[in-house]
Length: 152
Image 1 (cartoon, rainbow, N blue to C red):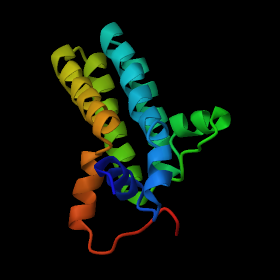
Image 2 (image 1 turned 120 degrees about the vertical axis):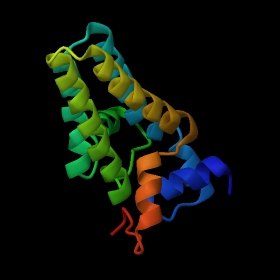
Image 3 (image 1 turned 45 degrees about the vertical axis):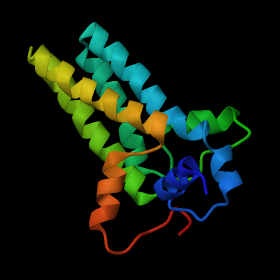
Image 4 (image 1 turned 90 degrees about the horizontal axis):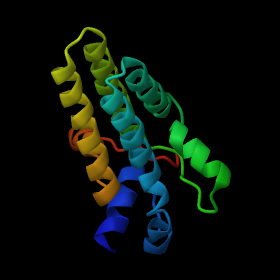
């Protein structure tokens, strides 16, 4: 199996063929790229409100079966993004916390901290978009003894 197909399988924790995984290649990039775009606008404008909007849209993925970006994508796409596995939802929760903190830092005038936190999230989302590796999901899976799947 190709490395990218394995990474998609690992992230979704769903048993899929290599072809099925590779069909999801573009779809799996929607959420991190959308996060990067919204975060970059918030950072450029030094806007706590846009950062909180980014946090809120990311938080949807922490508490539901798909992120907000996946939901919008699935409305128009032939190849649908499957439901999130718990590890990917945990990654969304982590992202929402970091983005919220970045917004708060802008609000209190700590722009350097806000830029660092937002930049960190853009870096993590960029790595996820390019490599299909979500570091928070990987860390959670390392420490968990029982793996859950999105298919359960």
